[in-house]
Structure formats: structure tokens, C-alpha cells
Length: 273
Image (cartoon, helix red, strand yellow):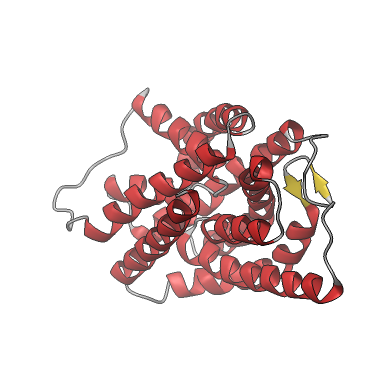
């Protein structure tokens, strides 16, 4: 049975609260829902708490998705006020993203934790390389038409929900490839995160329901203690990230995005090895 003394509990709460503050800034800054920070932090915290390997990554992913419901809403609202959310794209892409989320939740809820970890690390590494070394675009590209457009939306939903992220990790590079301004891509991605996080959270709660060896205060693969420790500061700091995104040069925003993905990927790969 998991036992934590008072000092350990307070330290854990402080770590998770600080994680929430950083995740909120990154959510607003990069449109990634904060999961790119929350998932690895929760993963390593659960290692320190001796949470069973079979459920460790699943709980990190499910809890991260739950936090994105709150931070994604605050971030999306901040970007909406600045006019950097493409509502037409949301309407046309939403059903495909949602379909991918359903498929990804079924997969993520039933595969081994190591699979989720490697998916997270591999996708993060690929996107980091793309964002860091992508040459300046000289040819304007338009979003593809049906069915390729829907396929892209499905891929974003599927892999994002398996990684426990808000969708920006994939949608920002894809939108950038199709000549979306980086700020518009980030703002739209923050709204896409809500389409991913809400059904994803419900799915992970369902597939983890009643399993043994879950951390205390867990509803399926969603840990309420982690959720309550992370969300308050992340909601407060998400608007700050959105303001920073509109104040710094677009290339600096791109490199910032790539750096966080690269660091996260390395950490997750080393944890598996």
C-alpha cells in the first residue's frame, strides 16, 4: 500500500503546483495544453512514489488530459480575445479530431505503459526536429481538401490523446506547414486541445476504472490529487503565456516550442532505457 508522510506530501504538492504554473505558461505560449510538461513530471513523480509500472504512464496521460480541460479553456479564451483562433477550421476539423481521440483512447487505454512512453518520446522528437530545422517557407500552401484534411485531423486526435497532450504538438507544425502564421496556429491549437481533452479524460477514466495498484484518489487513470494540485496555478498563468506569444518574435516562439519538445523526448526515452 502506498504511504506518504506529511513532508513528502507537502513536497509533492509543491512540485505539482509548480508544474501547473509552468504548464499554464507553456499552454498559452505554445498552444500545447501544458501536457508536454505535465506528462513527464507526473511520470517521474510516480516513479519516485513507487507507483506500479503497469499503470504509471496511463495515469500520467489521463491526469494530464484532465488538466488540459481547464488550462486549454483559459488559453483558448485568451487567444480568442486576440483574434488568433480559426473558428472555421475548428468546425471543419473538429469531427475528425474527435474520431481520432476515440480511437486513440481505446488504444491508449489497453496498451502497455512502455508503448505510451515511446509514442510520446518519438512524436515529440520528430516534431522538435521539424520545428527547429525547418527552412523558411517560400511557397504558400493551402490546407488540403477532403479526405486528406480529415485524415490529418484524425492523426492529431489519435496521437495526442495517447500522449496526454492538447494537440498543439502536432497541429502547430501541421498548420505552420500549410502557411498558417505561428500565432494563429498556436491559438487554434489551444482550442483543438479542448476537443481532445474532454473525451480523452472520460475515456481514460473508464478504461482504468477499478484497476488495482492505482495511486490514491484516482478515478480510473485520472488522479484527482494531481489534478487539484496542478490546475489552479496553470489556469492563472495560461493568459500570461498567451500575452508572451503575442509579444515575442515568431521565430523565437518556434525555437521555444522545439526546445521543450526535444528536452521532453530525451527524458522519456531515457526512462524506458
